[in-house]
Length: 422
Image (tube, rainbow, N blue to C red; front, top):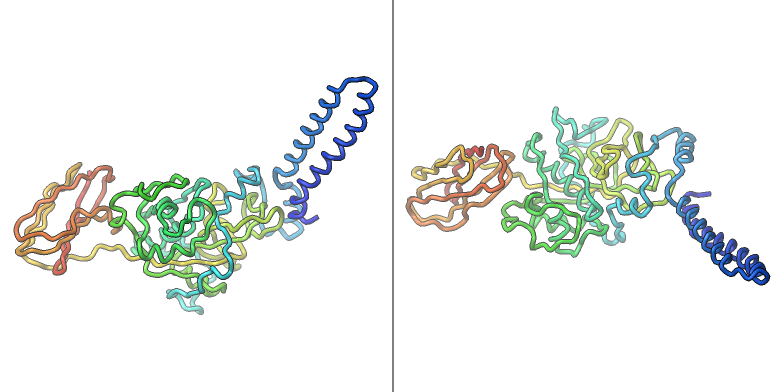
C-alpha cells in the first residue's frame, strides 16, 4: 500500500476497530448483565477497549518503519542512507513544524529573473562548494531555530554569506536578525509558515539589522522592541530575484553566492544520514527551506540544513531558488582636506571614546563607527556643525574588544581613523 494512503487510513481503521470491539462488548455484556446484574463490569471492559485501541493507534502513527524504509532504499540502489536521527522519532506534528515554507499560489510566484553571473555557461566547473572557494569558507555558522519564524532563516543565512563575499571578509561572520524580519516586515508575516518572496523589496528599502539589535526568540513580538538605531545598523540589498528552474542558470547564480531555496520532502527525510536525498516513503510534508551552496560532480545540489541533524546534505531537485545582492559595506578611503584635525583622544580605549575635530566653516558632518568587516556599528553624529572645534564622546557599552574604524564624512571630505577597544 502507498505510504501516504497508509498513514491517512490510520484514523479510520482505529475508529472502525473501536466500533467493532465496543459493539461486541455491548452485546456480550448486555446479555451477561441481564442475568448477573453486574453493570460495572460492562463499563470496565469498554474503558479497557478504548485505552487499547488508542494505544495501538498512537503506536502505528508514531513514525515510519525504519527497516521498511531501508529495504525500499536498497531496492532503489541505495541513493541515500537512512537511520535514526535526533528528529526521526518526533511526533508527526512536530516534524510538520520543522517544514518552514508555505507554498503560494502560482500567481504569487515572482517573475523569474537572472542575476549577473560571474561565470559564463561554458566556464562552469564540474562541482562547486562555498565552504572552500579560494581556500576560504564563505558560509556562516549554523543557527538552529525554534518552531517560530523558521521561514526567515533560508533568506537570512544566504544573505549573510553573500555579505561576506561582497565585502571579501571570509573570516568574519555577519549575524543578521531573523526576529526583525518576523516582527517588522510590512506584510503581516509572523511565526507561522510563510514564503520569503515578498520581503525582497522591503529589504532593499529598509534592510535588516544585526542580531543584537533584535535577538531571535521565535515568537511574535512587537516591532517596537528593536534597537533604536536599527536604521544605522541595517544591511540592505541592491537587487534580488528568483532563478529560472534551469540547472545551468541556477549554477551560474550560485557562483555569485549561496541561494535560498525550497525542497519537497516526505517524512523519510528526517531519517536521512548521507547520500543524495529523494523522497521515497511517508507523509508528504510542506515545503522545506534550505540554503544551497553548490553542487557535486553528478549534479546534485549541496544544501545547508536548518535543523539539528544532517547539517549538510545533497538533494536532486531544488525549487524557487532565490538570490539577493547585499550592499558592499567597505569603509571609504580618506580624502585630503587640510585643517580638519580629526583625532581620537582616547586610543586604545576601555570604556569612553573621545574624539575631536575642527571645521573651518559650517558643514553637515556624519561620524560613524564601523567594525573590522566594514559593517556600521553606531552613528555618533549626523548633523550640521558650526565652524570651530568640536569634541564628541561615545560610551562603548557592550561593544566587544577589537579593531574598529571611526569615519568622519561631509560632502567635501572623508577622514577615517583606526580605533582599538580593549
